[in-house]
Amino acid sequence: MSAAHAGGEVEVLHWWTSGGEAKAAAALKEKLQAKGDTWKDFAVAGGGGDSAMTVLKSRVVSGNAPAAAQIKGPSIQEWAQEGVLANIDDVAKAENWDSLLPKIVADGMKYKGNYVAAPVNVHRVNWVWANSEVLKKAGVSKVPTTWPEFFAAADALKKAGVIPVAHGGQSWQDFTTFEAVALGVGGVEFYKKALIKLDQPTLTSAKMEEVLNTFKKIKGYTDKNAAGRDWNLATSMVIRGEAGFQFMGDWAKGEFLAAGKTPGKDFQCFAAPGTAAAYTFNIDSFAMFKVKGADKAQAQKDLASAIMSVDFQELFNLNKGSIPVRLGMDLSKFDDCAKQSAKDFQADAKSGSLLPSIAHGMAVPSAIQGAMQDVVSQFWNTDAMTAKDAMAKLASAAKTK
Ligand code: GAL
Image 1 (cartoon, rainbow, N blue to C red):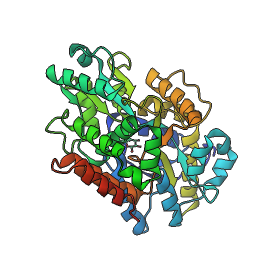
Image 2 (image 1 turned 30 degrees about the vertical axis):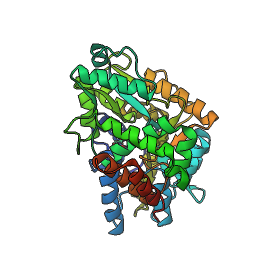
Image 3 (image 1 turned 135 degrees about the vertical axis):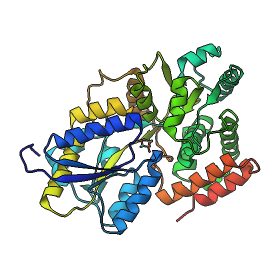
Image 4 (image 1 turned 180 degrees about the vertical axis):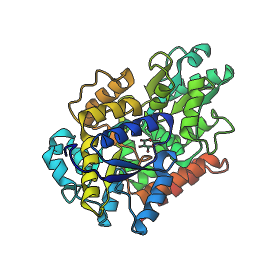
């Protein structure tokens, strides 16, 4: 894996096109090119990656897979089962990845015991982002930790003439908010039963009804132009002070930082109401596809090695808003939101409240995720649909094969 080889090309599919995301992706490109290889950018815009995954499918079906693609969670196994992923065990063994990653993460990167993907980060999803100045002006003296406090703060923001919640009405964003509410209102055991184990009675329980109604209540605090809005534009509304809060994973922090804002001063990060003692995680990773040609295979391994390096994990995550997934990293350059995330990640791993994000493809097969996501968005967008209707549909979506 030295810099002294002829160099090959790696085509990399990703969806990191917003300000903070693009800065983070550039760190990976530089790192790869420093090894003498060429980065062929294959960016497909669209937060959450739905469009990127559609494009990926058509490329693989036509026998023209990229060398590396941003694929996460159970989807890694789904792609590996198709027989299209490359074995990168020699890099992983040489660099002893098993000792550098939490076991649960390493296991997700392997298929039948061999590494087929490399992880870049840990994003926490159950965050809310707030504009400090806007909260102050509205007389909100502390960030809300319960749902009643949250709605009281949202009312105060409304009164002060700002949009309480910046939202982008896209399915994955609706679902990101929904799972935060599910965890906050229902708690850890409810989240596990309903959204990971897909337990039918829990999906149709009185608790789920309360979750759905709380989720829908948030809509009343969003603006009329939310439909279809990209997540980073919603973040900009908070950055500019047009809106008070945004429910979003910590890639939103990348946008605040890229805009020159300081956490704790210009903006606040806090766990979604009722979720401070739990952590929904979203681990970005690159799965490697089988490529033709020794130079391409070598370049692909160089990329894998770059991803796991200490300096990449630091630089990338400083820009991305996430924390390194590699164990034992020095976090002294990271801000307080990242330090809180790292602390909670460890504590929640011990207490059993480290939870895969369903909205970000960590918890269930992609077909089930897609079906449940559709129901949640339909409920968000259809005033005539009751929580009971939505529960019945969610329960049947959870049975998608
Ligand atoms: C997530 C992804 C993050 C972030 C976000 C918005 O699914 O894991 O890295 O980029 O989408 O695009």
